Length: 437
Ligand SMILES: *Cc1c(COP(=O)(O)O)cnc(C)c1O
Image 1 (cartoon, helix red, strand yellow):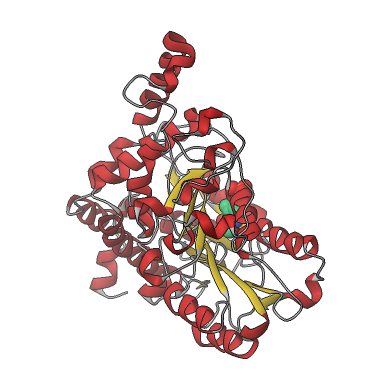
Image 2 (cartoon, protein in one colour; image 1 turned 30 degrees about the vertical axis):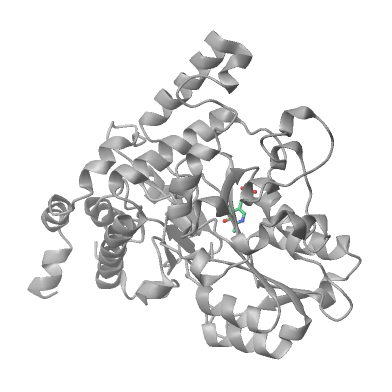
């Protein structure tokens, strides 16, 4: 090892990076789970379930006390009346994905939103019936797409088109996705790809994919489960038709919390629905707010993304989203978070390459435009089984995600992870693999 490499792999160096980090104090805004010995866990699982902001409890308690004191009147009184509660989330949610406030709404759950979006944007016919998704998509997305195809009387074998990495490669090449759209675009009704692929952490080129899809007459939507709160986006300017994301990964809104949805303003005109050009599944919360309670049974869609809402939403969950969005706002927003995220992930990558370069392969692309807060690491197990390795790192205080046979997914999250976490994780993984002991 030369002096420079000695230097970056040291607790002192990591701590120095933390002391220079303008966001280091945001960690205090979160509850960090503790190890048995009382130390903080090295929590690298924010891509699966984000940690709880300290203010969440306060926001939930406020709504519980409103309900206790006011009963039904809570719909119209207090600082955050329940009737319009989802409106309090729109502005900050819109900033996360690069949308107009009118283009986003928090509702339902992610998979449910994908279905509702497909009810509108997947209208297959004999000539154009395919849905393009990626091979090894997240199971729920795969099932949702497959079932939509069947629902319309088509066969997944013919109508489900899978974008695949080249033989021997782990991630998708943009040029290959664009070529597939160019070749088969006339038969593709819908392109539904991830913004960030959950397994490899690859960021897809949403702008180019959207433009290529539209040039061929396809609708284009994105699953942003691993993108929202991770990378900045510009859904409106990219002209994306729709997107959906969950709020419990990088958005720290609690297990199973309400999801987000984007529908481009091009699709908002009530007449598109009334003329049957853009069908949707409707409910009373999507109906014009002025006349909603007249109960006249004459559906008039709100001319925003809100008109895809069905039910009055779970306020306790929306309160947790509001707490999370306020925390992101306090940090300065997604662009600021991304600046730290790039440094943090780059540091972790450097440490791993330097200390474990012969024993691991990082599947996540190195290009900064093609990666976010996650590194997916294929580990050489040195004859150990993966359970042993996982047990060792867990016992040493790491929470992350291990996928058979040998992939560890780690997400250093800029809101609450530190450079020191990256240092500690690398040391622990070295020990677990018995490297350089
Ligand atoms: C996390 C995740 C989901 C989870 O779906 P839910 O409906 O929230 O249970 C779906 N798709 C992707 C790509 C995910 O990463």
